[in-house]
Length: 501
Image (tube, rainbow, N blue to C red; front, side, top):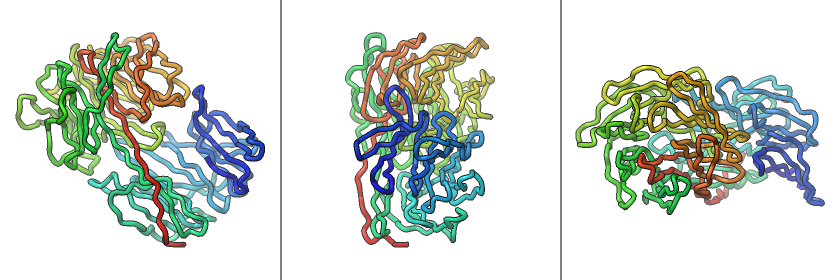
């Protein structure tokens, strides 16, 4: 949403009902609404009000058009594996700036680039994977937030960088403006005279919720918060009897593995230590809890580990490349999945499956909790950044859901070489999580929803919360569903006597 310079028009863009995205202009005088373009978002009006820069919702290219919606032309498109976002104008109206993101083998790159209005004269203004917020505060001055290094990666501080408006190149080196703890800067805005800064201190918290499934999975009863601490908690797998859920939490500084039954108020630690431990799952024979482990603050040296449920030290199963988890954003549509990831099923001859990213494909490989990596099962040509998957209970196939604001497609891929099966969960688009059999999380203009879907695509709405849901974990006996929402809280702050230009 953006005002015109004369205050008579309001430019809005993004999703609306019927699963469409577009750009509209609202005239304050007469309260008229005019659609300028479909399949577009992230619109920004030029300083003189004559042009609009926007991001194409389908191909994610960056385009320019006149203020009345005509004369549209592409400014730039992302290279393979890259994502463009945050298109905006330099204050002099001569260049377009945007963010550029890439994730490969767990290593993220994040840069701010600019081009002239013909798409040429590329200049890199800033490159830092910890970049979290930007304000084009004043002409030639960029105010931005950087997340702190681990273990304080959920805090951020403000920096500034001077740049040349004509060339888009930096002038000098960045300067840190704040050195605070407990703040996460978002939506920073500077007053016209540069004397005050307004921002949101925004914090997200993930918790484990559990609800009871009834009517063959078509009803979710009494979903309640299981983890009651104020740290980040993410659900993993269940014990074989379906009574206890595993989860991982940073309540002791690093992510450790815990377990807790639905009737208990306190969790029991399963695996602790200085390393980061992710995504616990029970082995098919019920003897081990499996999880991924990385050195704290590192994206290399990962391992898949096993710990005996009967007690004893953890042991390595195999080496891993990449980085698990997600690169999060305030918009789930700009949230990128991390690989590797793995799942184990209670039945079938395959048992456990590892998913890895390679050449814009997902490669699925069987592994044994004791013997380690086995044979490759299948390669699926999908965009790993926006794909979620789960293993069937008999370990014979995988379900894959791709985040798409127009589509609601789920692909069922067998490991025996058979043809994939496709189903649609329409009208619930923008699928953000999938779990057998089959539970889906949707994030769309209809709101966040948990669905139960059969293999013909018929969907039943189970739960419609007011927050985003990132993971779904049904118990093996089909009695419970654990899920991981992220609840965001934000307070507005102002900094008086802000350092002037």
